[in-house]
Image (cartoon, rainbow, N blue to C red; front, side, top):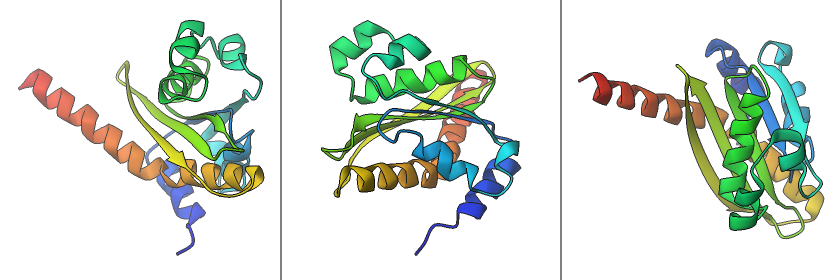
Length: 166
């Protein structure tokens, strides 16, 4: 079943999300996909395309120690990239990815800022196809996951608040 991109756009607007993307592997495909969706100016704030090795550190301030310890294409670097994108913007939700399109391995991070806390989710996926196909598939996946990841992070936020104030 094809993805209903406009339903995702409506969800983002309804939830009052303001997005930032930080893309290494997808080279701007996530932002381009979102910009083609209905009313994107209401919920897409900005995007960082960080394709050169070390750009995560130079542009967003991702720690060099994280990159050295876990590797540039790791969930840890994707997560730190998402959090850094939130820090460099006024967005409240971030999508980040790092990876190597030729190998098909892409690491994703989704991060949400709420009440001064960051909640996050990461995942590594292997896509098959040419480098261009992998970039497109990875971008589609990152955006398709937005509602589910937002719901997951919102549930975790609510669970944490219940525990804290129970």
